[in-house]
Image (cartoon, rainbow, N blue to C red; front, side):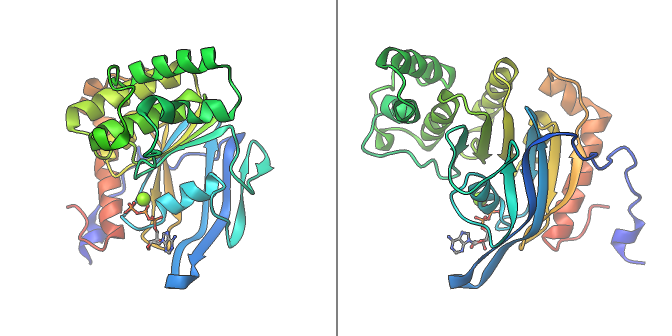
Length: 277
Ligand SMILES: Nc1ncnc2c1ncn2[C@@H]1O[C@H](COP(=O)(O)OP(=O)(O)OP(=O)(O)O)[C@@H](O)[C@H]1O
Ligand SMILES: [Mg+2]
């Protein structure tokens, strides 16, 4: 008997049922980057229900960013398709916003002008633009830094500008690629709470990529686990914890501990390590 075989299944961590009407449907998507001969995704399928947060977690290099870029219409698929609100994605859409893993701010624009970028593209009035900038700069805790250029901001502050820029256009679908990855632990928890607060007041459909199991469970309605590269979704877990969530209480709950252990075990299997015993 192998070590893995001795691990009893965790009955409460059940696969989530297929959502009745999904806002985002990733249907059997495959993608290779031929120049480097890399198959990034292989028959990857995921459904994201309207106004739900699905957290995606998987080994480094398994294709999470590639998946988000495909959903955002930035790169084409080799096969399969992506539907948003029933329409096949062929190019970027104005109602979909992305927070990039490596920030992606415009270096020649101030924090304010970076936040304003999408709003101006949408043709909003200058009054509306300045009100919205003030609101989101405040929300992400950057008041006083409106005129700073990205090179004058720390990595964490740049990430907050990226988050404010994405939220400011009030997208229907928000794609987030490890948005809090470079924040310190305290700021990260505050940003998670802020994100949930914004989400409660302005619900949107989110795909949130993270390397943190804790973050995935605290934020997610579902947690989608990916295999190693070429990535596909191997399991979707229904988090099934009531909202609004008190993170501290969640972390003490048996369900949290059980899900954390299950996800950790599955990730270890994917990266080729030994399963938890
Ligand atoms: N533009 C590209 N050209 C060639 N190969 C690419 C390109 N983008 C991604 N890849 C390759 O595709 C695979 C998946 O990359 P991707 O960035 O999607 O992984 P990831 O899951 O987001 O990783 P991480 O957790 O480290 O951010 C990797 O092997 C990467 O080298
Ligand atoms: Mg990535």
